[in-house]
Length: 220
Ligand code: PRP
Ligand code: ZN
Ligand code: MG
Image (cartoon, rainbow, N blue to C red; front, top):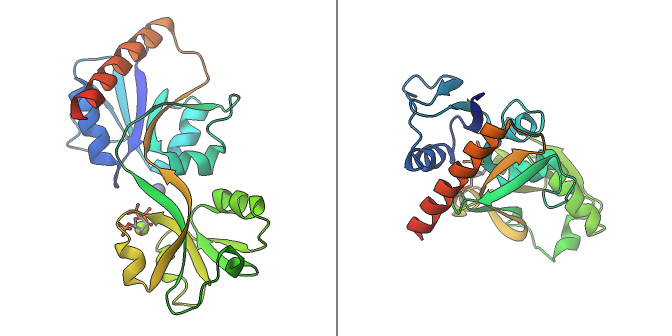
């Protein structure tokens, strides 16, 4: 059979947990070199180490067969993951990498609810999710797309507020911001494309999912 290609984040908050999940499912990789693609030692599987932001499109386009990515990236890049005609399907929620995408506001500025965002510039790396949210609430605000260090933008005058991932809240706190509204609860999810796999690949994926389910059960 053709190798089943699995995409995971090369480096970041999900990387180690993704690798350890796959290891616990019996997949072993020689990834000392951290190359883009590494073949599993004992299974017809290739691991692709890529930027998490690219995983939704790689899976959609068939560059990879399955991937592990934050629901936040999936919602941003592909849109509503729950819709049945979505080209990328969530097949498991993995119970790690929990965080939320939230609106945050400067502690020094009075906050009077969602209306406070009207006419404001909101810096974010998630402009699509933010714009959909603002539209659903009929709030006219500007999403300013920033690729990193979003939390510093209010203090340097680039934006009035931000929309970013929050886990412990420490980043917001140390930048004089407070979380005011949660837009999306996120965690790591396993995704696959709608494209059909070879039947042997499909069988292998079924067995891999059984192992993943076993691993998830064992840790709860
Ligand atoms: C996210 C987010 C904040 C931080 C929040 O970044 O952008 O910087 O985590 O976490 P905290 O609430 O525990 O302080 P991440 O580490 O995912 O990396 P990135 O900003 O490079 O995407
Ligand atoms: Zn990212
Ligand atoms: Mg960050």
